[in-house]
Structure formats: structure tokens, C-alpha cells
Image 1 (cartoon, one colour):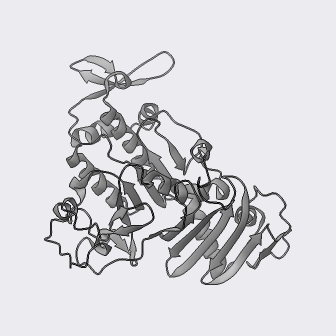
Image 2 (cartoon, one colour; image 1 turned 60 degrees about the vertical axis):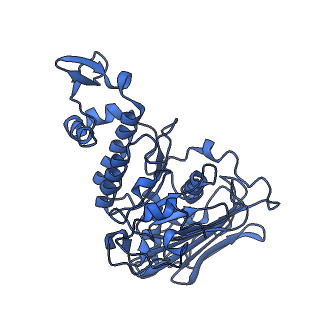
Length: 370
């Protein structure tokens, strides 16, 4: 699990910005939203332009040099903070795997160029390089003794180099190292605004309706839409080159892509990724930006409940206050993001919050502005 993340001099983050998922409370309700003392289900609020999308991009910067998964480099064109004088962005991740801790830090000048990396497992510094000082890496994982340690190529990650070129001994440190690699490989970011952009997990792109047809999920997708109060019947229309998905109006079919609303298309995107979350055990972490931009508030609550069922750690960003409810999550799972900080609602008030409190009403009344 991701337990804590810090970033500075990246996009809108000038000074160090820390997102702490371990700072929880001992609430006796919605306990499934917390695992091992760490927030497993988080929803982030904040004004437009405050940096919620950049927070997701910052967290997912790690996949650009540790994996071969989808990177969407255009999202990282403007990399360094505009007013910071430093020439490197700084990232620090903290993870928990069972009872084992991993801390991974690195500095970059842009999305591809890595200046330094440091990996600590259970407090032990097991991999380190700082190219500002020397191109020679220090690696202490058992099984890496014969690795070449001079890494001149600044686009080559030390951690990825170890993963691809070592046969690691069987021990606790190396197992935790691979748990860390697997977690990063299983990270997924997506959003449905104007570009249906995603990062991580897979490579390449898929046409959503074609994927639904190929996986024989048309009837299940129809059920999902009706559950979401999109009253419809779907059909597959045979074509010369390919089959297409259509709405069925008593035997008359009209292409899904032609008449589906933006909200329905957004639901199709969510359904597409939910199948991955259900089918692929490797999915470890999900960040959905503006997850309900086109949803009715009841549908937003449904989507959160569907994500909770997966058990996967997730972070959602939204402006929809109707889902600030103790019936869905709890005060230490709702985060309020400001320009230089992010804290849960429970940390923005000295008042003892109980399950019976209407925290949406409190939020609108400014109870969490402190």
C-alpha cells in the first residue's frame, strides 16, 4: 500500500507537499476503508486549479522510469515548477507490504532524466545513486554482486536496472523489493473529461465498445447501465469489418457512439476499467481524476461503493459534496486539498466527529476551513 507521498518543484508544487495516508482516526464505522492503519479509500476535494490533477500526475511519475506501461508523456511536458529556482523535482514514496516498509526517493530534471535514486527496505539503504556526485551505484541486495554499477545513462533507473538484470536471492529484502516492483506495475490512473487519458497498468490503447463486445460483456454492461439508471437495451450490430455496439429501440438500432451522452460514455469508460480491476489480480492502486464529472450524485455514490468492493487502494478527486457522508466513507478518508497542504476532514477540526454527524452540511458551513 502507498502510505505517504511527498513532492516538490513539480508542476504546481513549489515547496514540499505531503499526502499522508497514515494519519487516521479510531472510528468504529466504515472500518473497511482503512487497512493496517492506512487509508485504503480516499476522496479528495479542492477548488478548481488547486492541483488535484497534478497530485495524481505526481504520484504516477514513478511509472515513467520503473515500468514499460502507458506513460502519456504529453501530460509531463511542463515538468518543473515555474517559480522554483531548483533544477530538479523531488519525489518520495513510502509503502507498506504486510509489516515491511519501503521508502523510495528520487530526483529528476524532467520526466525522463533521473539524477538520483535511493531505496530503503525496513530502514536499510539497499540501492543508491547520485549522478551529481558519481555515476557509480551502491547496491546491497543479495544476488546483485556481479552487476555493473556504473550507470552513465541518466534515463536508466537503477531500480529498473536491478529488476531486469539480476537473479535475486530468496530472502525477505528481495521479496519486499519485488512486492514494491509489482505494486508500481499495477498502478492505474484514468480520467474521463475531454481526453479519456490513462497512465500505467497496460500499454497501447483500446476502443471501449469493441473491448466490451470482444469480452462478451454486452449483457453485463447493459445491466450496469440500467443499475446506473440509464434505462436501455443494447445490441451488437454485425458489420463487414467489425461489430459495433448499439442501443436497441424495439428492433431499431442506433450506434452507441452516435447518441450516448457524455455521462453514459463516462460510465462506459468506468465499466471498461472496472473489468480490469476485477479480472487482473495485479492491479494495486487506482487514481481516478474528476471521477464523477458527468454523474448524478446517486450514481457517484454507486461508483464509490463498486470501487470499495474491489478492495484495491484508490484515490478519487471530485467537486461533488453530496458524497461527503459517513454512510459511504468516514471523516479521515475525505481530504481537503489546499495550495500547500492536504489533510483529512478529521484533521481540520478539533470537534469530535461521530457517525451520526452530517459532515456534508458541516463542510458547506465551513467547519473544516481551519
